[in-house]
Length: 264
Image (cartoon, rainbow, N blue to C red; front, side):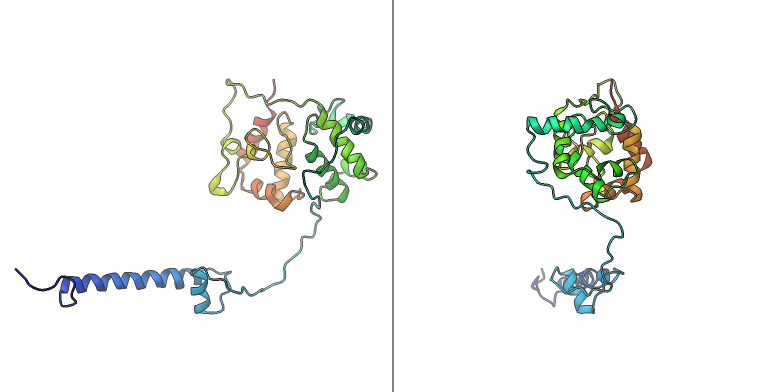
């Protein structure tokens, strides 16, 4: 029986194992802290040590190679809060009903459109107020809506939002015999950083400023999703809808539109 110590460099098996382990550690550190960071074409490392510090998670000063390019179009400047659009009193709703008489040709006498314009009955007041503000500021462009909001005051927009929010909305209609809920609506696409539609637009959760989509025209919904995807519409906060729509396939856009448009 050998009397040689197990953990000794004189033991060739231990020495070989220790050497291989050390080589693996060095190779892994080189790949993780040097090679992979330097492969990033836009990282802008000042040198080898800068790359190592970045890979280790240390704060470093990132040189600004180019000035930030500002968008050459208007974006929304509406600050959403629980106080917007304000008090929905009976007087405000009555004023809104009077103002809404000018909107009936496109949005229907009771806020339900037959012209592929959005249904406004029961729509969230915050969503209506935001869109009216964006039309007036030019953040959202429409040859039809633009001229109609020029003379509206903030109070007029509050009143219109209060009136339409007061009207009964179309409920969700998705019977068991209908087509299954599209995955993009129910689960999103996590690998493409797309949240479920229902997480912002109701049924699962609601995000302030996001509209209720149930019962909307499929033509309108597909048009808006395609406009977000192309950048033609750009009044979404922090580009959220543009980033989502760009990642959706044409089939997913159509499936989501048909799902929300489902009505008896």
